[in-house]
Length: 276
Image (cartoon, rainbow, N blue to C red):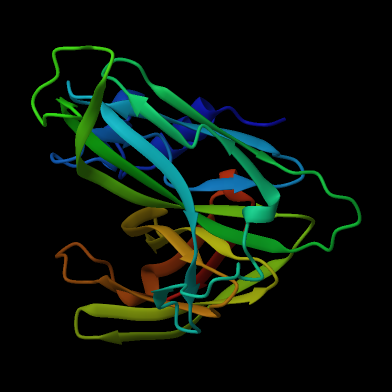
């Protein structure tokens, strides 16, 4: 059964690093200078989850004029991100597979805006993962201006708007068109002084997305987290580190690394390995 937007956010709220109030989670996606909050930072669609949505909230009194466009980025073997500069769509673009609306809108305080997405139906397709980025751009509407005289408008029938950029956010959009497989393993685990370094190796025909944790095996307590870990299909490994400087850090033989995929985004892997 498909999970609702609230259920997905509720699942995220169970993680220790996020506050337990749904209202407060909105604050996670906007800092003091941002008027617009989003209820997601990742979109995922597949044959069993063909529709999705997120909500935008205006946290201030001024109107916000917003637009959503689709962009693309490259990733190299080591996971380094760069802009995609070619005119044609990349082979793994999600553009041919998605519909969404609205694309341009104004958000007023107290009137949340829902943006809805749906996956197109196509026959006889090869299972594959596609990825693009939703570029969410919002401008603060400063005042209404008379287009002829450049003065504050007194006639409500003919004003235009001046706007000042306040928010630009790129939200990954991942679409899978069939059953895909992935495996993972920890490798190159090293401890130098008070720092542990390692790599999570990805294999298969889909990306990974989830949480890394350093675990005390004696009580299954997490001593450190790395959330929203993404390893896309262009990249084979993710390098990371954890600090061992805390006074209560147990001996290495009691430590374990764990990667847990986020089930809300198409994965169920749990990978573990002892540090020593």
